[in-house]
Length: 169
Image (cartoon, rainbow, N blue to C red; front, side, top):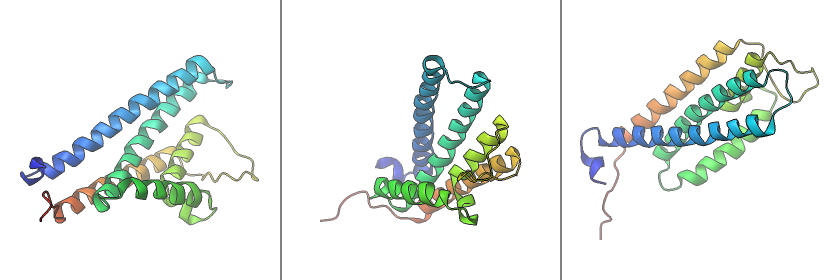
């Protein structure tokens, strides 16, 4: 597009698309959460606390996964959706359930730990869900660093990559 050839145009496009995606996703997810709380009336001792913590976790997930998808889109601009789905299925679904160090590299692991820490939930030892003993701020810091690194990486990829705007005949 014409914007890509202007100084800072690719950066503006990337950040604009990122913020647009985050905004729309947050709106949809928070509306869904409101419906669950109002209509579904979850059977928990503190439904408003749960709703607040889930709203925070949804916000963190949206920002973090949006950054991951920005990197994937910058790296694989022709097949970004296919690679994104593969990433979610392989890394966030399968790898996050492996009880080893590698599951700590996933966004899902950090989000799950934040949820459990902020709700003061405990799991029985035989549970297949892996929750660490670190405080919530530890996971928030790692998630924020992960997000910042992913956005920086996507900006760097766009800065060094040449994009063809017209097909040559």
